[in-house]
Image (cartoon, rainbow, N blue to C red; front, side, top):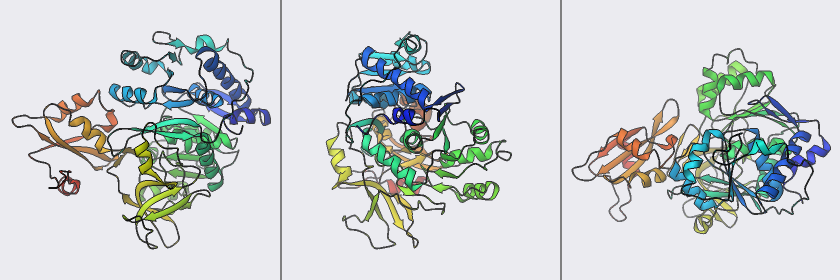
Length: 502
């Protein structure tokens, strides 16, 4: 077996090397100590919950060390973690749980109320609270010390076996569960380590939520793979991050442009030493010249712009600090640019980015048609437009997909439109992204209402609160007599709306 027990194997070779600093609880774990915690979790999953290879287990929690232990414990058994986005609404959770059919759900105290509500609609065999509170499910801390520490026999795991299911929205309006396999995650780690020259001495801050691919796959799992160290915090806090960068001698760091701006705006920024930083990577949205120049001129840091997506990687290009480009493909990533007819474009021309390699996902859970459309002859169709510049560096030129980016998060209007159109007074809806100083883009809903009816933004947001996460809710509302549509298909002409309302 070559998959599933990375931490355990490092524990034998380098038991005293620091693997994880839990800055939330101020606790440090060596690889040896982390492996023993994972062994406890494996015993609990197998003996107490009956989890077996292929079973799915959901997790609804803020970042915490137990989340990481659960992930590796499930990986040892060949079971699959389904991390849930805690920013979503109740009805969205119901969809995910019905789609993934987990045998158990782990959660923290902060989310036990929503879990209790979900139990009325979704009945799972097991509910487990990470905290010492058995109000809604079994309290893990009360059982922890009694769990065995010894290794269990390794379960045969193949590279095509799924390890993570991360849900991502799409242009169809329904989220899709992306099947991330053991092999895919391993090859993303290999690309990252080789492409960015990552080392066992590297240290990063794990601040991204672990329901995103960034939380696991930008640095977290690659660092564990090369025997580096992760510093865990609950969420992105600029002052705390700057303090940890200095105090913990952080060497690599990832964020989205909004986060880098928040670091600049912090009163600690000027006094923080960046001397230990080898490189910083920005992703999720284009980096502005202003942010780029501040880090370059004030901190002597040339921020690299990366590119990826949940379904592939996400680390696909060797970003190198040339503003507006994402560099050359990673060592084990093939790239094509094609025109609308599927033919390769001429050098320097724009085309849809297609990616191929062992870091491509296995498709979408329960969605064979969407899988077949996305992956054709082993090439993943990203829906993003790119071009190679004169140096052979890839530049992102735009999007084929109907999508905008808010705070580094992809927002798909079709998902929001589907919910808005279910409102009793709405006859049609379109959502577009409009510029915003803080988040880059935010949503504006353009809505047709039924004759004699009216709708305010406040009424719309009240209606949406149980249906979609707050971060997806439109910031603006425009009521129109009629949405512009194509005569033949009746499809909304969004280019007309963008011309009028941007």
